[in-house]
Length: 417
Image (tube, rainbow, N blue to C red; front, side, top):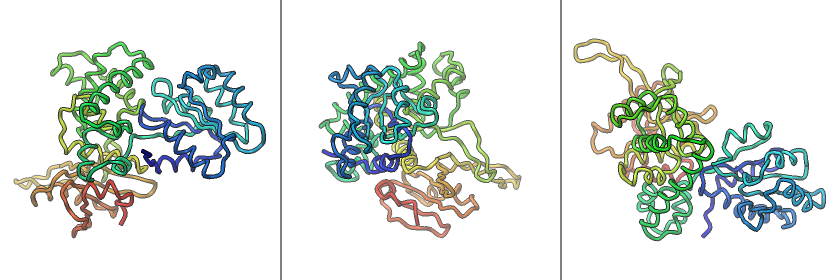
């Protein structure tokens, strides 16, 4: 079964010959090796690149253990390059090579060498790309399967695919399992034995219990506003645990660095300024989130909000949590300041749109509640309400576009009019 990953593949293709080291990053088991060694290799071969100009080394393969020595790897690559034509160097799990930075930097000035590598979470993250390659590293961050990719190989209806995806997420390996028990055991084992181990090894974390408690809290509160101070208070009052806000902030930053979560900060739409705290946290993969809390708290409202956030980020948008502040009169005619939340303020270059995630709109009252914040915005950018309700796309008198979640996810142009 071949899973097409056209979005990420295009980013690899577009980065060819840019004079930089292409570094494919992302959480473990999200498909980095498959993208590089299968999809990108096939593309290059279809472009007419001959096999002897594709230098591919899987450093995780014990057969290639010798090449984990930096000097032997350099010699091996150099011996393969026999003419002045372009060579494509594809190295998987580069972190297994000691002094790998020097190895890769050695090819920065070789005009007929185009280098692509993958690395694991424990030793190779976004900040490493920035610091280790002297400004010549080009990061291509890979995500788990998007819903569009997932449904393209799913054996069933779109509706059942959505239910499956919201519970088990988009790690590619899950498509090979036949029952829920296997999927559950895979996700829980992956989280405990791989992701946590990576974090502990890289950051030498000794407070294992506190880190795991924090992950449980964040997983339980996706879509909720929080900050380190609030979390410190929660640990103190609810769990009777002393856990400083500085340590909490450090741990949250770590979870972001290893691609498990992302933070969306608040933006005052009318005041045109950022409010740094509180913020919302979303999981990169819903299956991992659900596995972390043993598949409890499967509220569709929060899961769909997280799913929408991930799709927006996949489309290359920066995504903030919007706040609209209004002065209104209360029942006594007294002026009061009220804040209305816009789920997502999405920016891409000079383009912007606003999105409300509404699981269901069962009544006119609920509909007006979701619209209140959008109607309070007095600019001309597009506004959307995305709902699980079976609804045909339409635009109301206020210019707000309503659409079903499946249309949003499956149509890459769904946010255009």
